[in-house]
Image (tube, rainbow, N blue to C red; front, top):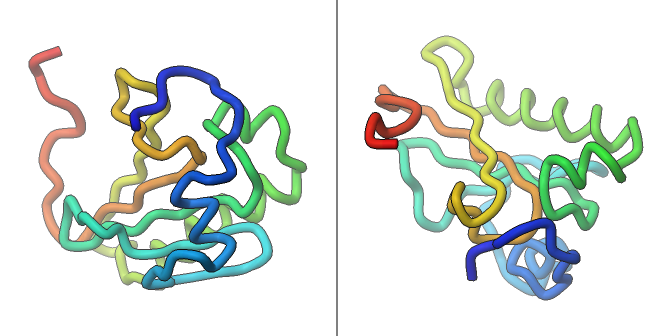
Length: 127
């Protein structure tokens, strides 16, 4: 179900269930602040999701409620994932969607890491 606004955190969303170990994933990286795993429906040669371990709906929610150490740890994890996947040389894209117009499907803040080849335009010219 698409996310429509800043809704309360749903602890039954798929990422919350992955964090609790109820749903398996192909882990790329994990530490105390973040979990990174391969997307089950990749949109590029490399498509990894990085999620904070706390219950945050969006980047605004994350920035407002996460501790400084959670925020720093999360963004360090994003960088470690890009480096571990060997994306630094050829380049990569980070993307985070929020809300219905952006196509957010899971109400848990997350960043997509795309790479592995040319990624094309950032957005469609048909806006």
